[in-house]
Image (cartoon, rainbow, N blue to C red; front, side, top):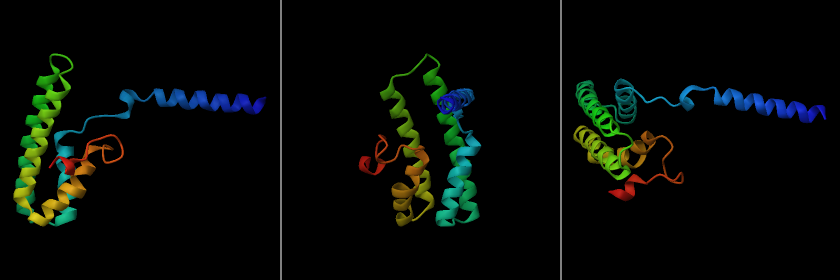
Length: 137
């Protein structure tokens, strides 16, 4: 009986601790954080020249700020239509990929699309219910 009470107490305590996390533990990355993630992935995978990385970082920062502004605009009237929101996100993702394509070789770009870009979606890769980007191209 004591063991059952102890297990129940642990379960209740664990649930209370998990529920106490603000916002479910998710916080949107800032523009600078998103640029840094891509910078690090590109630099470690392809070793671009520093001047190319600076140009790419600046272009991505402008793109991500525009994307954030568009998303704020879409959400200002409440929850937007899912298809509209997804179309907007795709435009920005395609623009990001075009920026990267301009900085790398064709072979490196294939690696970006097939292996690196899917890691940016946060758990939405194949097998997790998310779309498979390479099938969309």
